[in-house]
Image (cartoon, rainbow over all chains, first blue to last red; front, side, top):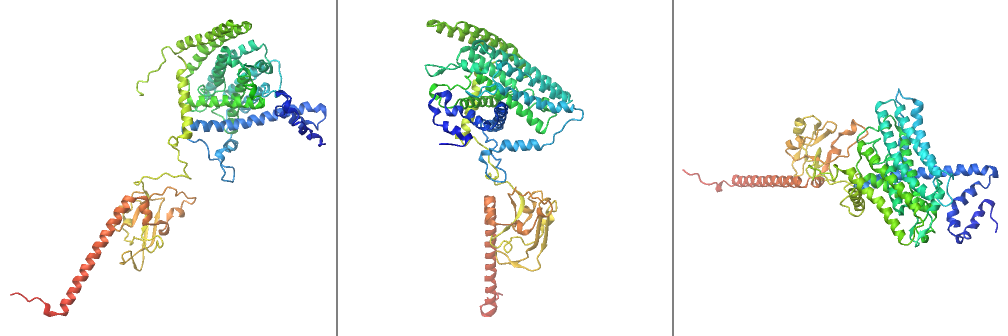
Length: 423
Length: 205
């Protein structure tokens, strides 16, 4: 049987399924499809087109994910508040609604057609650059996340470091936005946002240091590889299932909430209290870009949390390995995003002093103690038998003890709160 | 311990999320253009003209063009022209009727004074709220064809009030018929008495 050149990959379809999970057809499908697209190119050009293809795919997949996360967020928030959420946007020129699935595109058209107002005294170049820079840095962070067994856009030795360096650069864009608006309230809000972002940068960074310490590498692919395998075929060797990993994951997620300006840490643009914080002078599509960057940041941080703590693309059990790794990654990502939305629907916003106190007096000490805990864990890796139980006991105590003590200190005098006039 | 309240809060929101799917009583939203709420009976705005028969609305208007409402209307939004001829009304009595009856709804303030002064139960308050138009002049000036609505519709929107009105009208008609019958009987008796002077009772001294 002969097929035209580019279609030969179809012949591999039934053959490769028996050759182990790593070579399963579905697992290799993205690579095979990419090679099929670039096979007509001369060899020296392929690497370039391959990279461009991965960029295009990341942009389109996460762009669509952003669009539908906003819709899911509005629908879930609505359901939690016992209302249906947006469900009316039809397919244009028809009456087909499909539960309002066209809503993100209607929102996009709306923000594109809105007038883009730039204040007269504003620094036009910086005012234009701020959303672009913010979005660019948010997208840069997508480069090092392993989305699947064979799907890492860029393999860096110091991938984790690169991720957090690019993520931290978004703070520059926030201040650019506040400064370029030439509005004293925007500037104040940008300073406040910066105070929050820098406060939470520390627990965020300290939360993943234990992972690097235990895995012994800064490469994201190697960190995922270090979490391979299962205990008794049911408990995966993910770091979240160790005492220090669970604590690190919790600290990481709380700091990620604050880093991505999500409720309950959405002080920089507290909709119900401020006009829009550092985004006051932004409208139309520039505002939408800020919004997009915020969601990209949230998605990227969730992806990093999966890589560092939730075993990356690994399936939770060897019996579920037939599902391709990138599906597992996306499943975990959706679960974390759902958690973000759930938290937003539940908790009221913190005050500025509560926010910084929580970071400096609670999360940072806990993260430092957790670092010691991880050091103990990696030093005691050869303990066996009853010592293994002792190892777990000590590690759990080092997590729970400081949590209870610090928590008592943190809430002394303010909790449990008594509401005198509300019954 | 720190965090238990947070978990409780998450539980509450999760319960609401799940509940909104299986408990229809939770979702209080009414999806308006497709589904409409039943307005309270006492809700009223903009008057309409009552007709006895929906198949012939212009022939059976209760309005007799007495122009009381036109004179009483505070914002002067009613305009009536009397007919030149008379038409029998529902009871068969010849009456004038409005050749032109117009209400400018851009002026009308839904005060119900026209309803209260009408002696013929001919104008009543409506329950309309989807009356937006693209033309703010002629489209808001409603003529008698647009204003005429059947008595059955009146029963639909204000059942209690309409039943009272119907009972009162029926009583009035019955009284009028009895009076007419009595008058006819008296007339007949008088005619009989006139025809036979013998039957005339003798004058007493």
